[in-house]
Amino acid sequence: MCPHCRAFITSSDKTCPYCNTPVGPRAIERRDPGPILGGLIPQAHFVTSMILLINFGLYAATALYSARTGNGGWVDIDGQTLIAFGGKVRAAILGYGQWWRLVTAGFLHGGLFHILMNSWVLFDVGAQVEQIYGARRLIVIYFASTVCGFLASTFWSNSLSIGASAGLFGLIGAMIAVGVRHKGSFGHAIRGLYIRWAIYGLMIGLLPGIDNAAHIGGLAAGFACGYLAGLPSIVENFTEKVWRIASYAALIATGYSFLQMFLWFRSAA
Image (cartoon, rainbow, N blue to C red):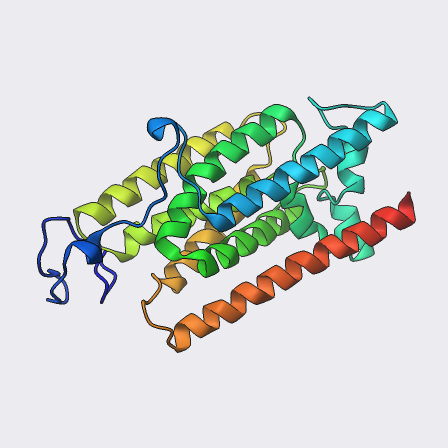
């Protein structure tokens, strides 16, 4: 990636073909962490790892609570437990103003297979988005995609809905935006790859019990955020300050949502 215009270039380029800036080995070197198990396990970055940690922490909490009530356990979490921990339910959001559920629902999972599949995709795509967009934009993209995905689900269906897939589709949408904004063979390859990801995911979403409205809402929000965001600059200019503030706002809103979930859970227990 060119250090000046952030365009995608090849390792053999001595001068950026887009802005004519001389580049050297360090400028085009990808700053990836080392692969795990020879590349079998995808790479992950800090924010991606933190999201995964929160997801597994909440899964452990819901599994323990579900097992204690006798309605579920570690393999499958019962619906009442997921509602108690902040799952998306239209009546609670629109009827009681529990808008924080649009955030908390994205960190809950209904079973072991559910969280393992979502975690694998997040571990892969999240690392790619964080590498290309940076941590600040990843936070905003993931937050906006989760909220917009479950907002679309709220107006589409009254059924219980949970899972990281709204945010995951947002990350896929952001990668599609990279391919749309950046012309050339590399941008075309990225666009084609993640459009296929989106199609496969939406086809799986046609199965019973899967919330495709959240997928579509997350995909649209992620694409919009990624297209508007562009790639990060190497200097701390006004645009980067705006994204830093936006990432702080997303983190504060997420923390506030979990606080409201905890207060509601304690009062209802």
